[in-house]
Length: 261
Image (cartoon, rainbow, N blue to C red):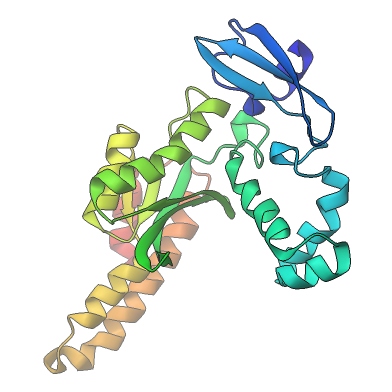
């Protein structure tokens, strides 16, 4: 296992390079394939072969085409009609993919973890109850999506904390520099508690919406001008601060922005 640990550290629990012991080997009744289990710091982990789906429900090659068609929203009953089994079988296979680490199966190189993130909660429903999907993105890639039963700080911290834990498995020293949010206090507090010293940036779209919602008829004449200036400022900051490659200090960039306005 040592060569695989060196080559794919994101697939293994943090600290495995220091020490682990072989615990046992179990034979799957479904596939007859042996599965190794290791012991590390008193916790048991199962090493599953990549050519078998989670819980040995199928071989990856046998499920590949059906799972691919789910990308195009082919219904489960149609998959059962073409590939056999029943609709619930293919539903469970798709759902089981979510048990894997999103970061661990997306990013292989710890240096590719993004320094700047965006986070927001998608309002959804689960068994008739309202829930919030705490979603983390970076570098045009979804890096975290966990369900929270409420939009409070405690619930969001637990949900966003899954992203943090998966990121630390890949890079124990990972510390993002900023996170872009919509300004919800619970979201801001959750991220500040998960990553000490992280900079929280307000979403320009939500800033615009706040200005629009607070614009009365009295200020309607200047609203369009203020709104246009907001989006112009967003474009200027992106062009001249995040990607300009200059060595200007933050203070000098603020002066440049003031001159632009």
